[in-house]
Structure formats: structure tokens, C-alpha cells
Length: 255
Image (cartoon, rainbow, N blue to C red; front, top):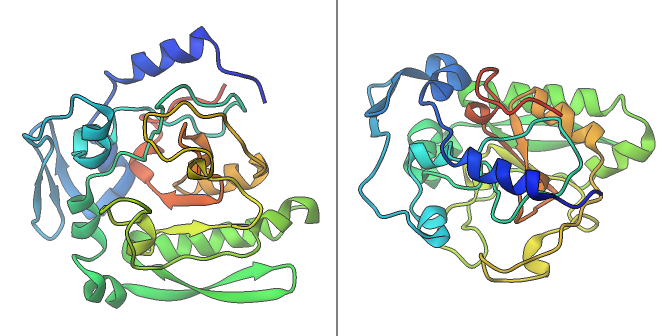
């Protein structure tokens, strides 16, 4: 891995002014009927504010009280370099929870009505995984598994131990995990890396670690899933469906 440079830090601050509500239209297609600097409207008529009044001056404010604009404040770098992310650069980790509840289910009962089962290939056969069907997330994750099954064994081994739906909050927070919506998957949990194993504070200085091969990462990104290994607060086992960050006109171009 190459350590980030002044150019990486510059890119971080440049990204803070980036954001386009049309990324939601482009990413979610027919699920969203309109999006502008005022509001976002879903196909069922649900209207969400693009910005909320909650203060977002500190990092803790942003991570705990994100809105739709905040979700896009850092531009995701799909398929790109192996350079560790700059300090506090977590594109996709800032989430507006009401948006995902409106799309995938407002509570546990509603979410579970939208879950279907897919087959996920492993080196010893296949397993069944519950995944949300809204927007075709289930079909995309199934396609990802099929592509991964064609990789060399040395890469495929990192797709073992897959887990998806679990209605729970993120460790040490009251924010729902993306696993709660059935739109996230963890791979190789016993051999990948998680930032909280190094530090607990959101603003702590931490060193980057990763063993997940980019061959797997790029397959996920091609189908609209982002990777937690592109975060300063790295979670290298973690992938979640976030097509607004991977919309063709919105994604950071690969280096």
C-alpha cells in the first residue's frame, strides 16, 4: 500500500463541496421520481428533505445527523488506487437513515416483508442469504456471487463466510446498520480488518489495513455496491448497495 500524500488531502477537501441531487435519480432509477436541492420524492409519493436543519459542523455531527446532501459530500473512488484514504474520508459512511427506511422498510417487520433468499456460491457448495428485493438488490448480489465464483481460488477464499441481513445498530452507536435493511454483505469476517480494533474514537488517527483483493471489490462496485475498505474508518469485510455513489456521472473516476 502507498501512503496518502498532500494530493490525497487536497482531494479530500475538494470533495467536501461536491454533491448533486441527480445522483439519486441516476442511481436508483424508477424508485425516485424527482430530486433537487430542496427535496427528493420517491415513487410512492414519500418526500424527503434534501437538507435538514440539524447542525453539521463537526465530524460527529455529520456521522450522527447526516442528510441527503451529506451523503454525497465525499466522492467515492470506484475501482481506483490502493492508496489508503485520507483522514476522515469515508464516502458512503455518512447516511441519512430515513432515506433507507423509506426505500427498504420503515421497521424490522416492513423490511422482512421485502426480503428474499439468494444462492451464494462458496468453495464447498452454496449457501442461502436473505437480501432485500427492492430495486433488484437481490438480483445484483446474486450476479456478484456468480462472477466471484469464476475468480481464482486465492481470490475466492475472501468471499467465504458471507453474512447479509441482521436487524441491529452499528457498534457503539444508535444508528441502524445497513445490514438491517438487507442491502449489505460481510465477507471473510475472521480474516479482514475493522478500524475499531485499533481505536474507538471517530476522530482518532489510525493506520490503514486491508487484505481484501481488489478483484472482488471491483465486481461489487460494478453492480452498485461500495466497499468499506475505501473508508478512513476501514471495514474491509463490508459491502453495501449505494448506487447514488456509483452513478456514472457522479463517481470519482478510477486512477
